[in-house]
Image 1: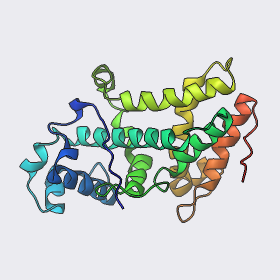
Image 2: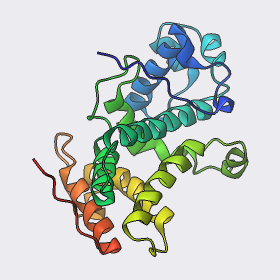
Image 3: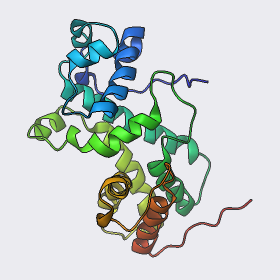
Image 4: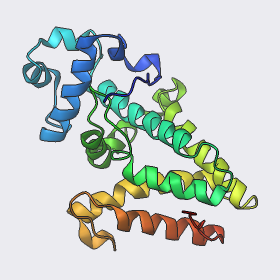
Length: 232
């Protein structure tokens, strides 16, 4: 069953909001599948048009170039994780328990919820792991930052940083820890799958439990706090 939610993203990322039309949703759906299949370097709008049985012109009506499209997908994912955190931490007072849930959402955002019909969250998660940093590790990052293209990521990390500050108000690096937890979740899944000598965790059959435990170990040891005990 699809979730009826609207993800709000920076209007500068698109020519026309793809969430508003059937064609736009089809572009998002097929771009996720094709980028995952062939990689972002080989991906282009001509191949996308063939994949979705449409035309390049129709894709350009929605996105100026493939970089903007990748930024859109990555921003969508950042906002999706923020949404999951809001839903899953609602009415939970203990900040340690909230941080545990945040880490769980960082690792398992693709598995927590039913699918929005035009977004395969599991495949999008794979793109975030393998391609996500290409959205902002670019020469144009400073200009794009002034245009607000990374607002969704900042909102996500600031939300997490505020929970970290609740746990340990004098912790000097809440924003750094927040962004590092998110990046570590993705990097160490990637390392475990492709460069295992760079990590100490193992990933098999989309089981990321060891990654989750590693992130909790780092976070709670740095903060000098104990993980919350879940009540049945």
